[in-house]
Image 1 (cartoon, rainbow, N blue to C red):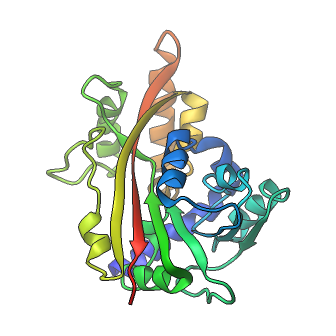
Image 2 (image 1 turned 90 degrees about the vertical axis):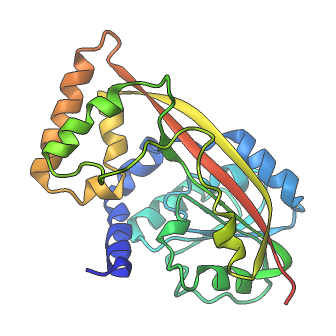
Length: 267
């Protein structure tokens, strides 16, 4: 299976977790949105385009600020949840892939993607973002990924033996991502020749989970959704057993993300 086919296959798995996604996935830090709006200086009348909205996890904080947002989400179940969640706001949820969608009418002031940009075809994503934007418009990309502080919860390193056992271990030579040490992808953005990166800010935050909450979170990750049933059963039962042995029954998961803001270059 080629890289493109594998990306599309895994990207399609999220729709199977639509009932869990909004509840289980972490919220992005409010400081991230404040930084985004400070750097872009968006007017109240600005039009925003979101790529890969899922259930609207990153949409809602911006919708509450009154922006008109068009959300692209290819998964029908995810799109249905987003429409319900965002019904009270000036938001249109379009069931489409960014690669297939055709913009029409007034160009957008901001194109953004939250933990979704890596699912878009790399050969066209920057060209399509630039085409959707007004001159001088902005592209903003960020994510929530697992990072391991040097003094973080040891659970994740300990549970790796179970991932190894079920054939889902880390590739040889993998290193643990650390807070504030994530790649900023500036070179990739600017190599398109279409954007100039104007701001890069790293964020990290922590959430606590009991066994039920953590298993629900894992059920929204493409790699876990794509596992065979026996692999998931073994992993999730071991997570529950190990957390049951902890006095508070909880683990601490640390998140990291990089907000990258780029301005469309004049052609």
